[in-house]
Amino acid sequence: DAGITQSPRHKVTETGTPVTLRCHQTENHRYMYWYRQDPGHGLRLIHYSYGVKDTDKGEVSDGYSVSRSKTEDFLLTLESATSSQTSVYFCAISESQGAADTQYFGPGTRLTVL
Amino acid sequence: GQQLNQSPQSMFIQEGEDVSMNCTSSSIFNTWLWYKQEPGEGPVLLIALYKAGELTSNGRLTAQFGITRKDSFLNISASIPSDVGIYFCAGQGTGNQFYFGTGTSLTVIP
Image (tube, rainbow over all chains, first blue to last red; front, side, top):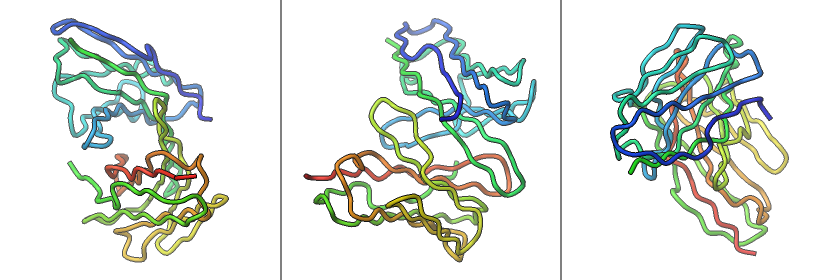
């Protein structure tokens, strides 16, 4: 299994509160991703990082920010959580090897915003 | 954002039967990945494909990278109860983003 951990694994919070989710990898991979998974939508990319301090927006980035100060950590922050952000959040990592890119996922964080 | 068309959405099969599912895209991809996800877990990579026409096996699983580079197929032979789960395809174009299908839910009836 790829060395990816996510914390917390479960969180319940209230609307309007800030929330930070952490992804930690031990593989030294360059690329890290945050997805959300919702019924009927599959996995949708929120933000991704292609190196320390290098990040870019994904398909559903509104309301989210990210930071990557170290290769191994990628943080996802909800500045002011809303009920529409109730979801399961997955972190993923990949390492580009020419044409042979492969992506591995963490175990997920279930976030409930009341 | 781009989403892949994955079919079927769900399958109910008898143990021992073979399973086929596929993904199609309007765009050309350079990489196709197939994942399995079980309840409460993250997707687990099953097979990775990197060349058009490539056929790759992993035990009872076989996947193919379509010649047009716009589709991929996953077959499971002689299904068993532990094959139950949701199977996702993912494709990657020239950038570093991966695009996902909406999943095929597989139920195996003993």
